[in-house]
Length: 298
Ligand code: HMG
Ligand code: MG
View 1: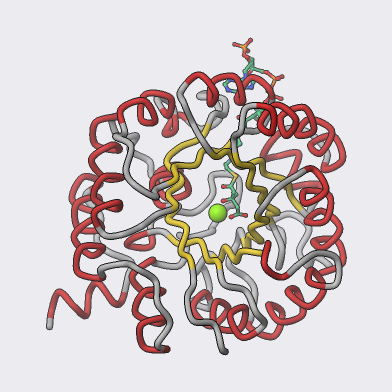
View 2: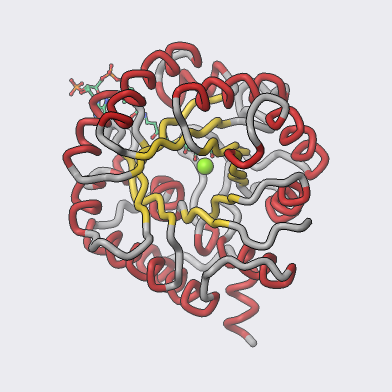
């Protein structure tokens, strides 16, 4: 690849913590995000404005956003599924929101209780209000390389939903391998299909590591021209509506990979590992990052 720099979107405080059994208090979540900022992360997804009955771990996301100090060049993002979520995000001072759709009808129903086309209809007024308030809009497509309920998903189905999100005004569309079932070859085909419908520069890769393919998929997407990647420090995460799915690719793995490729990330690996140690201690878990484990025993 000839990319000189990539951008890593840290999703641990949202995609990671939403899937941990133990819900962490707001103060701990704020401290965690501050450690990620100290490591050099500039794009951090810090919470979601969804139903606390569906995802109790993310309740208090408004408080998290209110307490986070403004940091130069840092953007905090939160998931928003509907207008109610948007109002709460706006009130908390959130400057970037993310709407989330799926390439699979069954997943859409289980995750946000509506069909894919209904979700796009729900996102439209959210997108309009975001624009009116100067709030940046990101979009997700889930199940891009497989669905826990439907199995294989056609790349053309993903490209179609991604194009609809782009038309809504999403500046970036993150392609989510929710169940971590994809392979590098599939990743190449996926990026090719999406790049036929919308600019490569708006695509981001969001790979879960269920089958251990996430780093390989990131490399495949990078070689296909993608330069934005989502990751969770320490490999936190999963998805409550995707049985068996494990965490996102570990941020440490991506920083190490890009460093070794001579691609700049702006992230300090040692400080990142510290942030991972902090959150693992809070959760009583051990790191799912091989890089963090290797560095700790070196
Ligand atoms: P629903 O039950 O269809 O909503 O849920 P409703 O409009 O019928 O309202 C029912 C109740 O929910 C009402 O409360 C509403 O006020 C409340 P009640 O009157 O019963 O007390 N409600 C809300 N409360 C707080 N915030 C809101 C909100 N909206 C309604 N925004 C809804 C629809 C979308 C709310 C629900 O299905 C939900 O919250 N789902 C959670 C989805 C979620 O967070 N999933 C995980 C994130 S997606 C993911 O992880 C994938 C990703 O990482 C990419 C990848 O890996 O693929 C992004
Ligand atoms: Mg995810």
